[in-house]
Length: 224
Length: 224
DNA sequence: TTCATGCTTCGATGGTAACCGAAGCGTTGC
DNA sequence: GCAACGCTTCGGTTACCATCGAAGCATGAA
Image (cartoon, rainbow over all chains, first blue to last red):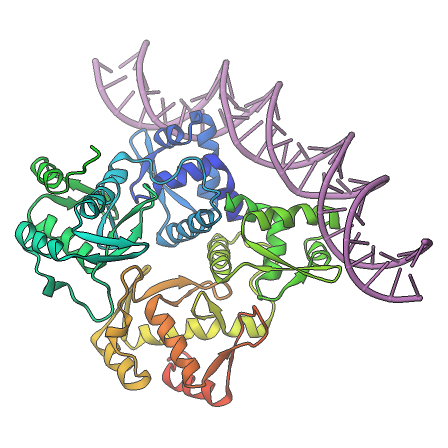
């Protein structure tokens, strides 16, 4: 049964580590799960037999990746159910620091930097938020035009809200979604501040050195 | 962890028995799983604590049902993965023929007819699919407007893809999910082609006589 | 009240599987 | 050749948890 495979904490940690789409070696996965290589080897053969992961030999390394998007989708679903009950596993969210820091969520910025950005906008009254509803203020509109050359007209869409709060997987706090969230992410890419990781299937967003500085200056946070 | 709950064979059998959407008593579930009532009781409290099932007291009976469609959806997904490896549990898919033919998966159409629909769309190049990604073609958009009065603008959603492949529990093949899948199911209901079974909690979708004809005409399949 | 039914709690038992140490095997590099 | 490295296999230990018998606690019927 597939569920029992995912049910074991060690295996669940391994699968979580593979959720970013990249392949990892057996030893890396062992370290992720906090177990010895020989135990990990046993787990990995079971996961492979169950069709959840696929191996790829490369020299003396063995890389493992999730079999396909169906597997990833079911794992997301399970994580979703787990999150509802509040009975989250101890290790919450992605372990990969890069993935934690900045990643793509659909088409906008998520992770540490995404949360920080929304915090900054809220703190300086560039947006107003109550619950999931976010509203762009007049100052906010001026800010966007001045610093990011984003005009409010570009943002309206028949069915999609301009601003929306999106719960962050790793941070458990909100980041900015909606057409504005997407437009800002696109602008960061155009300005060469950041780019999606070239690895196929990766959700990591890499910031350049200067991009990170500019970003930090623009979205400074009072608490830091 | 949710997965470990589903992982136990006895609990899995109970959940499978509940997959038709109806509520069953504790003793019935014990019999389904082939265990004594006291063991079943222990399992049921765990499933309830995990948020997978909900109890309803009625006299000296306790009826249990799946919490909601999300739970059913994730269970479908797990069953789909299990089916792929050939390591199916003895009880394969839904027993009820009506459930096999057409049922609700989250908010879209699943079962024999759901799979047939996506097959037809793909075959006539109304959608393009590679793996889990499905894309609506220009012809597809025209088709939707002409035959189902569904305009593409209605479909965009900040957090949900328009099209998505969803692995079918009984058929082991994909059917159509996403906002389009939901919109089409809704349209079928509005056109009185089909309706969810009135039994509370049931996931069966009943097609009317004329509805079935219209559906078959619209989504004819070359192989049949 | 008294009894029957449906379900839960308690306590003890047993089987399964995760886990690690040690040894084995294949690959890479010197 | 030899050594280092990455991973797997084997054996034995341990911890967890599913399981059931017996008793307890409700509800409903007589």
